[in-house]
Amino acid sequence: MRKKIKVLHLGYSDNYGGASIAMARINDALSLIDGIDSKIAVVTSSDNPKTICLSSGFLDKVWLYIRVRLAYKLVGLLQKTSNQSGRSINFFPSTVCKRLNKLDFDVLHLHWIANETIPFEDLQKIKRPIVWTFYDH
Figure 1: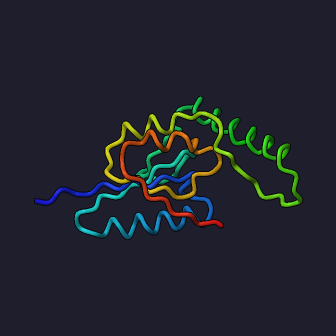
Figure 2 (figure 1 turned 30 degrees about the vertical axis):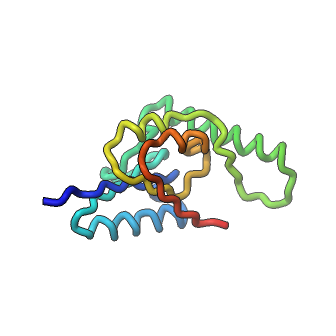
């Protein structure tokens, strides 16, 4: 019997925005392939019981809320523009990398990881192959 390849999809949310829809569709398609075990992990709360929530505790949720608001304010001060879309710098520390490294997967597929999902410096601490799909340009 062949070993299943375990794919973990990481996104900010599994129920908001185009990237989360694409992530769910890719996850569903991969789940149909024999030999692939595909799961989704997010930092926001999820209504889907199959989704892994990496900010499950009350303090994690409060810290995520604070990080996102502070990042938007900081970017607004540093980058003057008439464009009102939110920007994220993924600057503040989080526990996402530590939690990811405790999970059992072979490949990490990054989707939309803005909104302070994970600091970019932490990506090098993930000791498994990473695939990253960019939805916005």
